[in-house]
Image (cartoon, rainbow, N blue to C red; front, side, top):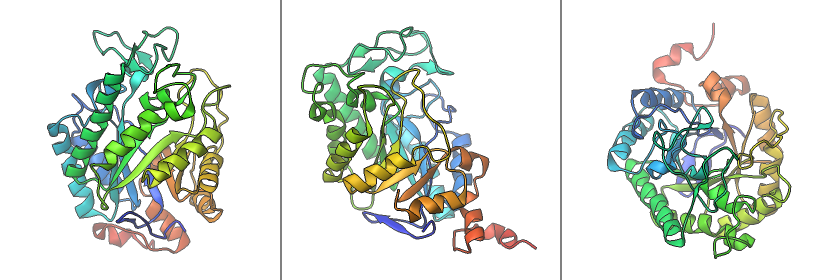
Length: 350
């Protein structure tokens, strides 16, 4: 199944391998540069069906660090367009971008909040910092929430104009949208807090706004944290219910990760530790899902798909170690996969 095509809207992925979005912390003023061109271009030569560009801020305060990528202006989008064009011309990979806002987890470096003079005032649904030693974030007013929805919509428009095949909304890992979802970080008493329906409202408004900018040639994914590993917090049952709503709002796939919103929680780590979350969302909500989290071997990836636990395999650290895991896996499994014609002499070892 790893090398079976799959289609979302009119976007056909040649196989089920996805390079997961990973921050590179290498931008100035949110601009992609030569490093990003080489980084994403080289992964495109490795045969993965889809490459996801790192978490990309929809406004300056949406970055995690001063060196994170952005797509809040046209110059950033123009530079990203060069990467997209190269991937489309020189590979069979599709390319997506993850639109993100860091919320209260922004203005950091090396996982430590930097002074506001060097960074910025962070924002959140409620005046609760991620860590007690950090600055209290500014609680968004309703009109400011609407502005953030518009920021995501504007970013989506730029991404579509740049030629991206997939837009992913980052609603996981304790960033702004996740902060709204969780009753531990969202204690609002207005229409954006309290009940499950109110806490998911911000995400659904973003999904609807982004969909207005999309067409059948651009698919929409949403990344969520299946659980946040904290008592009385966001649980897998909430994720299943959210996925049902997202399906009804034309989301094509739910990319299921976990954690990130509550400081100091214990996460049980083992190979494929988040796969059961993706499986439960897929099978109980009836949606397509992506599995991610310490998936290191071709055989393990194939097993996940064969068991019906997910529809796509997102890999992160492993594709940094081995950009050619998809094409090498095709050699092992005697399957067809894109291989650069410039490298054909190396396709069969002798």
